[in-house]
Length: 284
Image (cartoon, one colour):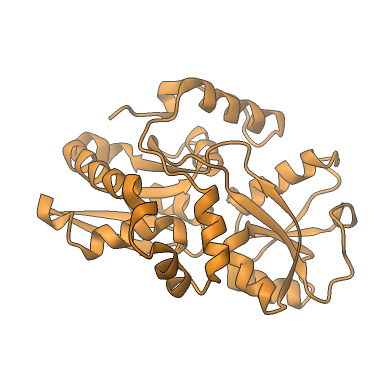
């Protein structure tokens, strides 16, 4: 049995992976798929791919595109979630800031450089007409727990994170939600180290077939909203809203979408250049 390591954020988007692992579906194909939670998000997973700690990652589109262009020896094999990610823009409950404009020039908490929380701070700044060089400052806080501590203690002023994941912290008064900032592109993709694509191509193909079958049927699993609410400490109405907004994908990202993402990242000076489709994508 071949061991393949995969990583993702411990959030509701990835429940389909947990279900297929629990059902032993990969072992039935002679694959020992080992899941690892990455609380630090995309930046941490990029490092794990580079250091061969994991072989596959369920990762934010913008983060892996930037890191592949920066030299990460991986390729995107498929879009995982087609719909945008709705980033909540949060401040501490006792913060003096009450509008997005108040945050101009203050300190954004980010999990690490190159992470989604880092890159989406640029998107938010662009959306609001800020000066990208003068109006953005960053404090690295590693993960969501670090953000709770950092914002509460005044180390940073605001924090972007997926709004449904942080909703319990808004409900209990730790954070205040000022606004949302949706990604202008499909949010999650599946990335694989090039070495694994060369040596375990059929295994990767089998893994994708299994997960795609589950995501096609995911919304129709009986009482899936209750399962998600209990597992991720969410209110049932929030889960139902999230399910209505979220669309999984079983397809490869098309050339026009990939170019659009690159053009926006290049405009924001997040990437130094745009590259060819085949430099980022591996067709399965």
